[in-house]
Length: 255
Image (cartoon, rainbow, N blue to C red; front, side, top):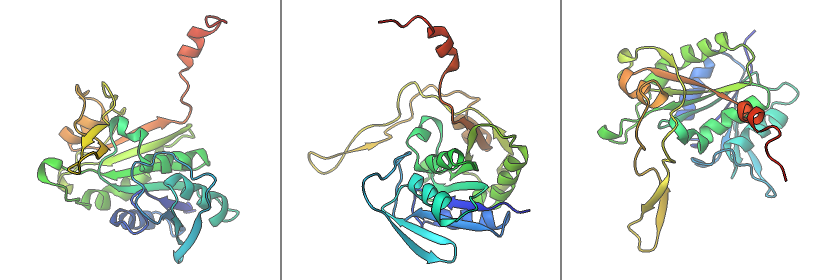
């Protein structure tokens, strides 16, 4: 039986990446629903819109936009209301326009859409198409388009009920140069990649990623995707407690 699939993203319901993801999902199931923000929510992380009303705008059959909503809002609305009594078995978030690698995942609305999907009980996968910024900012969707459905099927077949969600990045190379799927850790940077970025307008600035903190681990997502032309899959825990530290600190913290 084909799974019920819920799609979201952080680039907005009209973004080209969500059309790519809809085509991917259509190869896996005929029960596909889209609930996505009405506008760009990049960098929203796992923000919920609390104490402010949101609106559901039905754009087409099984396609809904949430006005002013974050990816997490969209998954909640989809899973607990729009899909009715039958929640999605699978939540797919993306395909993001640009890579979500390393510690950038903590700010990613794409990753948060998948994370909330997993918290809501689905098998959840965030998907991003990387950009080679040395060649410009053009996004080539071929790898996500060609390899996306096979990647999702492989993850669904291998998933064993773990308390996790998955972060997938497609490399920026010709599709016939993709070397396969590599399951890797995410890159922990030596410090946060986000920083002050001056604007051309006096007195204004951006929070941006001015540079990638070094060093990079050759076995982790950032370098494996970039140097090996591999599709990287990173399983991420929902339980974030460091149980080793819990055990180490037992009885040591006292007033």
